[in-house]
Image: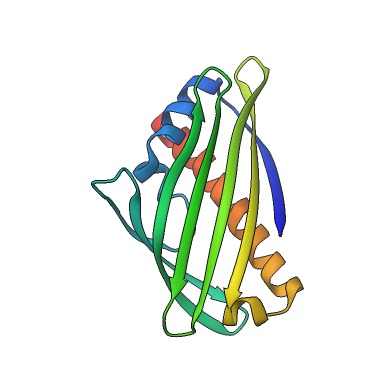
Length: 151
């Protein structure tokens, strides 16, 4: 399932890119993130709590930077997680791009291709799509708020 989101951020691309490049700081913009820790292999171990429909989930997983192009302000991440209690998991490939729109304004584009497996895959597509879209939208809002707070 592919979900896309974008928003305008009242900033030049540079400060936004610096924040996005700091994976632990940016990860705390993900709704429900409980903790994140760097691993020796360059990935990050994370725990996220989420509610999908009536079910509360706790995902343990990894965040990995796959590609980064500083000159184009583009990065691609792989995010994987599983909930042992419910017996479901997900894998997301997320691309983040910054597109200058004018003085002190940048468009933040997020595209996420997510696959749900196990019990999570059995939830209805509309429920999963709504939860995924709202999580990505909230991430974009939280990132913007964090950026504005540090300005």
